[in-house]
Image (tube, rainbow, N blue to C red; front, side, top):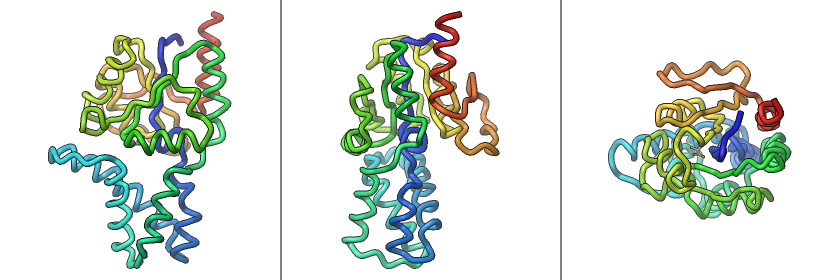
Length: 228
Ligand code: LAC
């Protein structure tokens, strides 16, 4: 496997969005896991709906709107302070355990690394800084630049332009199967990190070139091909 650049999705791929579950549970006893799940699925749904409607708002606003909806749906009366606490937690998400060693191994093999996310630039920067991985990336690219969300092809193509490499030379890595299809459909070589073992691929036309279970596995593949 040889690429000039590997771009990573952020939420669900590098950062564990469900690391907010504990705080959700502390603030809303008995409803923490339901709140965390609905919050994430509404966040994704709002990004798709706003893209289709041509009514862009950045991912921070969408994340807050999704939280407000999810809390109301579950009958939770969040105070403004609690809402702020939960939003702040998005800036301190945990990394999956393979992320730091995997990224470091790729860097050691000379691969350029980037983030390509729907996240607003400030929230990506804060999460990467707080998790101690910001210095591993040469670029943190946000859908905010084209004011439409992945899987719109304009987002993936913007990344190739900004990184100054043709689509075929960018590897894109995501744990979100819909994102993998979107990137492949836009002409990128995509890799699916299957973080939930039983999850099937999406029934969409474009699939991952390869499925791995960790970023460290991806780094091993890069080395294997490099020395082959
Ligand atoms: C990302 C979300 C959608 O783009 O996972 O980071």
